[in-house]
Image: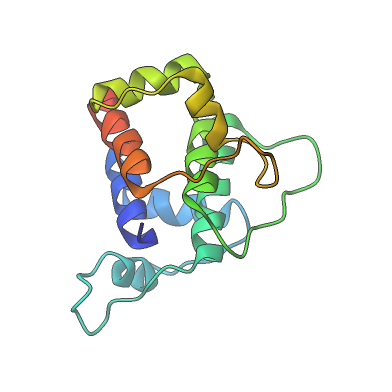
Length: 151
């Protein structure tokens, strides 16, 4: 999925205004200006449209975890250079402190049924034999379910 679309969807789900989004980025020492944020939300065919890099979006997601759960006691997490749907899914799940049952219920709100074992495959290490790539459809259904739950 496109990071700009994901940022737009998450900001809508959590009812974040521009200042809150910028503050979320800054929680992980990533400075985004209001102009940059505005260009992230432009239509793709707009001349001032700017794509959010995976690294920038990882900063936002890590900031969301800090905003929702508070800072961790240990050292600051290293920001990923490349994001996958699995990582994005997991970071949102962590930010909201969701358990498997919660995620399954959210997915069912979006008319997607997954079992606990199917779901756990998305959160395993890449080299685990039971690891499964999270498709755009599953991530989109999760976000759709979150939107239904939070409105």
